[in-house]
Length: 80
Image: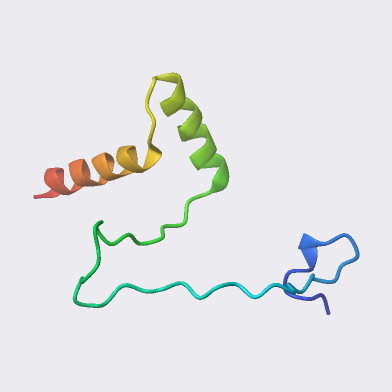
């Protein structure tokens, strides 16, 4: 049976990290200490994101995130 992340290495065995990653601090649930809005991960195909990024950059834009937010807000307004 192949290890879960075996495809990441040449020999078929996933490498184990010897460095310990520092724990990420999660913001307080009441919002103290937060300067930005909460974000949530969204999964999109890498090829799609890269194609969109090329088009945004070609048109002089800087942020795919802003484009996604604008499109989602527009969709919500249309449904209301």
